[in-house]
Image 1 (spheres, rainbow, N blue to C red):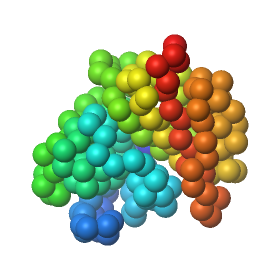
Image 2: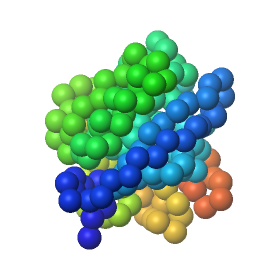
Image 3: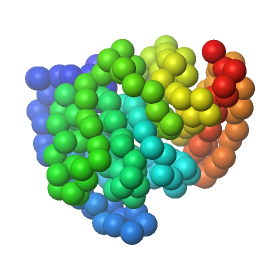
Image 4: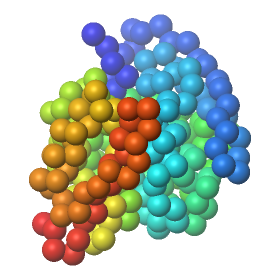
Length: 200
């Protein structure tokens, strides 16, 4: 079985383009078969975007997909530098393409399998976890996130309750000192964790 987080050269790929209205701007995004949420902006990502703090200097969007979160955040916060990391090469090319379409210059799109190729620290890390990859994959992202946050940095995720949001909450509480549910909507939970100066 092939999922959106894998690279599959044998998959018949159909391109799709759609518009997303968010706050001040209307965005144009392109997606392909085999990329998460290929026909419209997913509700969880939009809720996460509504919930994240603005104007963070350095931001990581881990598992960026076609670039919804990273491009919108970068456009809305022109003084931020956003790093979009993605394992799916088709999705990565879409991030770069849509960055140009939406005239976003403060974004760097790079390949990474989780945090394996990440060599920076950030003030904010955002993840819409790849649920179909399984807990082993995205819990490893949770564990690695803390090493890539600056002191007082913020880690935020969105997850549906029936996909394991409460278990994810417990996992994050085992890693971070301060963890809270900051938004709930239509079964989605937005969870925020913060790294203190004393968190290892």
